[in-house]
Length: 294
Image 1: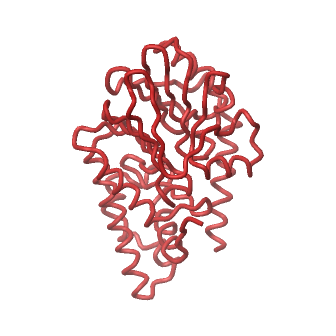
Image 2: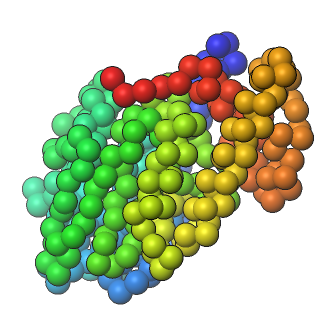
């Protein structure tokens, strides 16, 4: 497990250094209107969702703390409402780093129970922590929007992932259970798994429809075909790695076997945070040591 541990340390250090080195002046917050009163904000880190009603605003994820003032200014240009709910899709710092800066007396931070547990273990301040937690599913209500689903998916990107589906607006935020057109980061050390990741994507696929707008954790606004492409890619890689392992290829041989991922490398899937060697190592390790909920 030496290589896996090295990858984990690299990820942690990269996240810590990224936070420390972010200069807000170099980051532009891009706003995309998804449908009426629903927006996707891109900056540095996970994509943010903003949903506005007459007198309330819901926010999904908060990116890194140094960007909070810029993100607030962008939200203020959309709505003058207080933020009623801040929903975290999982515990990673590029999605929760700004929590404390957005957590006012009017705001309730919402997340799956394992997010609270992991942030407490990381010794985060009280204002940073979820105040309303779910085990499997809860429904939130806003004026004119009383059908907001927050649903836990098990052992996918982490052990605390949730997707947020505005049924009436037909918009879903998938968090890091979806990286558009890239190999995903599956955090095995936080309870993630390849089987859980695929199962989560399939569950969401069965929940939404052909007209649903998908906000990924990272990447551009997406449609259902993009999600189908991701599922097919991960199934293909899982099958190829299982086949290679059955033919007695070692972990190192699989990592360096370029044929396994060539089709998707040629499409640019390995150009993001996770390259072809890392996704192969992750899938191999996950199949050898599958994570399941406690």
